[in-house]
Length: 347
Image 1 (cartoon, rainbow, N blue to C red):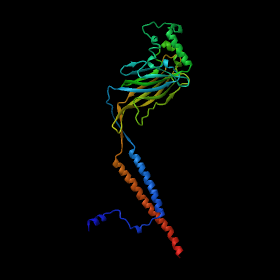
Image 2 (tube, helix red, strand yellow):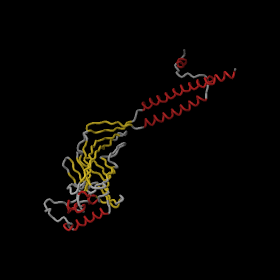
Image 3 (cartoon, one colour):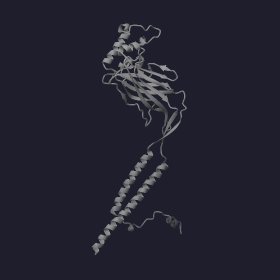
Image 4 (tube, one colour):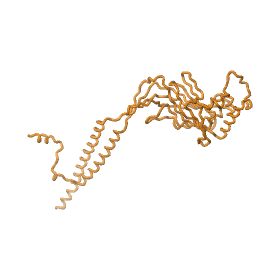
């Protein structure tokens, strides 16, 4: 036996002579259906191969000495910008009042549209820096309007006019705090207590209704969900303090390009405490955060090409075998139905 004959002997796909092949309409129909199925499965497998897969890994957080970025974008529809202050305190003892770095405010009218902009550094320093509480002074002064200087009187009149006009405020920006547990809150705490009393006539009249447009602790990555985005808390009567207890999980997102994006994701629980008439505490919106000791790494991965080829062979080969079986069954069925009719005609 020659080499050519030996090669032909191992052919697993022998071909019949052309005149021995019989083409049928049922076979054509099965072939078309099979081709449609194979094309659909091929596109599905190709899409599955090109889709990026994410893998989550957890480890102990070893970061030290870094800052924690807090991105805020909130609206207070019932409080003018002149009385709002952003304060922050952490476990290290650092306490900052009326933060003004990278924090801005937008004045809103009764309908929620922007009517003006100012920088938050002017919030306390220029408007009522002379009205801060001084522990060394005699506090038995007259609490009526005539007891304040002209600047204070003008400030109180300005804020009351804004309240009558239904002005609100939108606060947005970025806080860079130390990477330890702490809290930041937005309130009227930057006001002198006597000035606040003259403006609101009591803490129960301070409406801290708010809308959280965005609150995040780092840049966004694909698939992230910030649970407080879009939160709306509107008080129809009375007032109180809102507290959001936040658990921050340090996160690293690794792209296919090996680029690493450090960020954070978080979970939150909410608590509301009403304030009653003549109560000393003043309403505020608190965000109390703590950091998890575990860090999460999210890696983008793409399935291997060999895996794609294996799945492609499986689905296309399986479809070809199935359509072949279906063609044989249909041919035998048609033959079984037509043969008796042919015999009866001959008789």
